[in-house]
Length: 167
Image 1 (cartoon, one colour):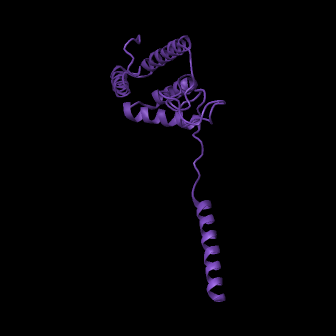
Image 2 (cartoon, one colour):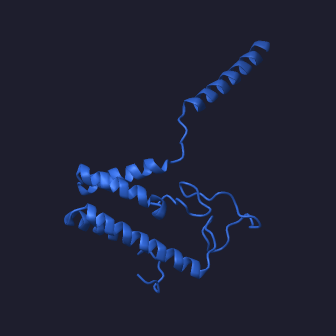
Image 3 (tube, rainbow, N blue to C red):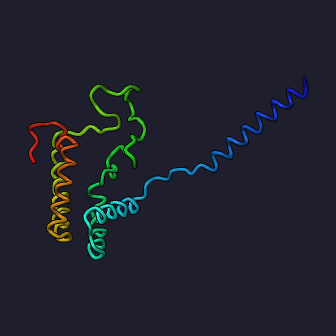
């Protein structure tokens, strides 16, 4: 009986130790680094549109300059979000369940604030495109704009189904 109990205890201890070692060996995901993300985006664009080295250098500079202004899909600078788009906790006074019709973690903005943000985003996009047009040749830029149009269509036109939005 004693041998059986000792064997069970030894088995449980070894299983616990193996589980702890397994955790040490698994690489932990580190938060995405902004400069790394800009470099990856630049590399993807260089490959996709066939840019040469000189164009690639200019594009990296441009993407770095606009990374904070535009966010590049990773919710950089968006209130209530951290990298990867997960909400940072629950706002004070809000019940546990999600409010009906509002995405979790999304801040409440007044219509004037939304219009101002949209206008600023549009200005940033136009400035980025103008700079990009100077870097790329005509064929490369056409290809980029066609890809951008496809992305916008997949995302519902970029205005999430609101017909009264100005473009």
